[in-house]
Image (cartoon, rainbow, N blue to C red):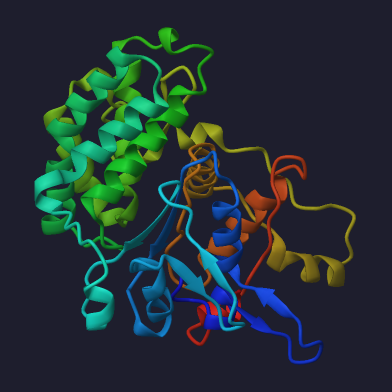
Length: 343
């Protein structure tokens, strides 16, 4: 996290009015980690290694193992209980002093692959080993080919990385499975339908209407018909939602009843009109995806042109969440918004 904050917010600074020292975010965590002698703590700084902030950690990484603050206070590292780790794509901007102090561990993306992280997450989220192994087999069989289709034959709205997609797919699958009273309630077909539903969202969710038909054809060529919704003219798998009992249901049947507000005068109706949301199959689909992402503890990203209802749908979903379950705030961002401004 060091990149979006200044040195004062990271390590601390002296208040210009009171003259008192105030710890920054990293210093506060450093004090807490090094005050607990019975616990093992890893402090991980994730992001590009920049000389502006990493030079202040050189004294930590050498034999002194001391964090020297701008206030001249020196805080020792409690080894072996505390470990400092830097996670970065490279050390292109690190000084020779920093490079000579770190122990470099190169993680080769090709050597590890996405299967290790996805498999670990799957076995952590799914209690049934049999279900987890079944999902791992489907991941190995379908994920990379589905991504290849999206990246070569389609025009995705957002670029996809197989590692991120795999973890998203696993999280969405586990969230759907978690809606059952027990994992044992899911038979083999139900497990596979939950997987297909998660695959459609995680991989096919970045496709527009034209490319969705290609993704639908890919699934129908590779999967048993009973795992997919009916192959009706003019519809694709994106026009259906999976119920809690792993049954496909057309989105058109899930439309809530809607009536325009009554008893309003013409000026009042004109004022309320911009805030009206008439349910459509697409709004039902997006609202269901938002709810599923929240259950899966995954952050959704709504992509679309101006006036397509992204903000309206997100705010409506947030407003429906009870105050006991969630707290939310609305920020309007633009191209000129910087990380420091947002914080």
